[in-house]
Length: 199
Ligand SMILES: Cc1cc2nc3c(=O)[nH]c(=O)nc-3n(C[C@H](O)[C@H](O)[C@H](O)COP(=O)(O)O)c2cc1C
Image 1 (tube, rainbow, N blue to C red):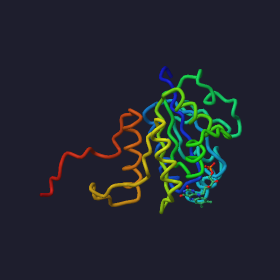
Image 2 (tube, protein in one colour):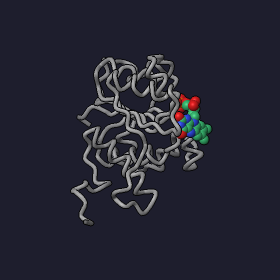
Image 3 (cartoon, helix red, strand yellow):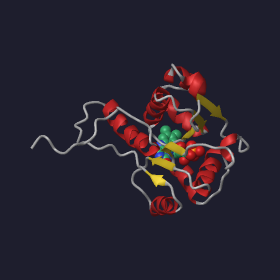
């Protein structure tokens, strides 16, 4: 494992299937992952997919987990991702709750997820946030602008339909493919748009 790890956080917004597909894809690409799951992230994994623990998540992702995924407790603000001196290739929070987005926008760092994101911004490393909420309040929009100005990339979980998706899997893949593109990880989840061939 010579490559620097990618920090992945799962927080309590709807969209657990995105998180699972992202982990499967990173493990498949043999990229080391440092995983943090907030308590509401785990609640959403359970509600949406019946995954009630990090062990169950490991079983779900399957082959490659033991080799490529290291997990960290969200309450442990002294773990490796909490320090700028620990090298990594950036961080993605998928899905990202509006609560976590707000905490990042204001630099509160009251959990490992929040602190690791704060470190990404101060170290000028990639930070991708995949929020899901609707409708958006003025506070949500201001927080998104604030984190974007600080260097984060906000990628709402908003799948496109121009690929003519036929299943939920197709919609999930669309969002995760865009995340992987931004992380610079090879993906074959979605074929690339080459112009409208139906005309
Ligand atoms: C079933 C369920 C669905 C939720 N969906 C969303 C959502 O789509 N977006 C969001 O921002 N918060 C959502 N929330 C609220 C967050 O989970 C809540 O604000 C939580 O405190 C976020 O904490 P975290 O960011 O540490 O995970 C949901 C909560 C539950 C229980």
